[in-house]
Length: 313
Image 1 (cartoon, rainbow, N blue to C red):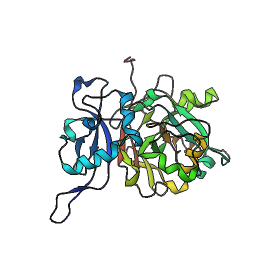
Image 2 (cartoon, rainbow, N blue to C red):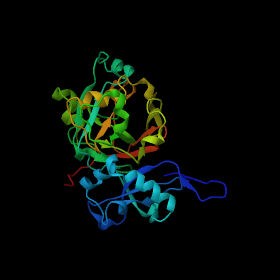
Image 3 (cartoon, one colour):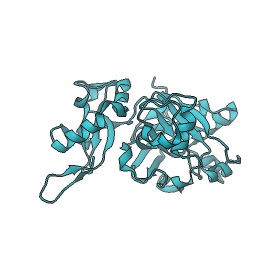
Image 4 (spheres, helix red, strand yellow):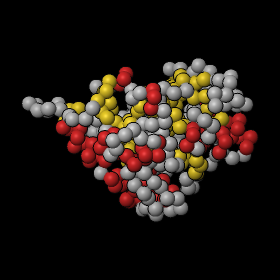
């Protein structure tokens, strides 16, 4: 949440950035949910629904717009009664640690389709990632054994906020909870060798997202946002979401015609041109690299790249 000081009044909340975090190392696979302020403090919102820390599955309830959580959160934040922590006191996790579904859209920027040597799609190209791919900001993208061609893809993701089945595009934005940075990491040698995309897209750590989910009202127009990817400080992708072929309302309509979307599902909308395998010479992620996804209004998602010799289990 951002605090806006009114003249002669206490500050008031004008938008929300939802984060998932752990307060103590002993929390294990339990989480808390909060709002990130412009002062880099975390306001703990967990008690609005639960008296205890939450499982990854329970976190999904917070993204359900039908349960009144956002309204409760905004009201309580204005009263300044909830506990808060300095950012240095907590560990931020992926804002949706284990989505029920991660649905990705392929070739959804015209110039990316061209650089990939593919025709412009006439309907959305759909693939998925496994939930075990998900990591948060600051966590490591791990290069899988057997792959030498791990690629980056900066993407705008949106989080589903209501159960959606056969939704018309005119009503689709009503089903969006908010937006986040997303990196569709891809092992191109796996992807191309297999002849389909599942394994190459779904290695562990291949779905970094965050640091936060900006609620829908924070982003005036998700289809007019600058989007960039930097590798070790060098900009390799630089575009705008206005170049999307299929926009969010069309994607919700298309997907929900055959797949029931649920709160907390993450939809990654595709990547602009500049990906590694299409560059001359190709550029692939290597041990020690720093990967950054930056989308206007959504902060910066930063992940280090690691090649681990032994399986840590």
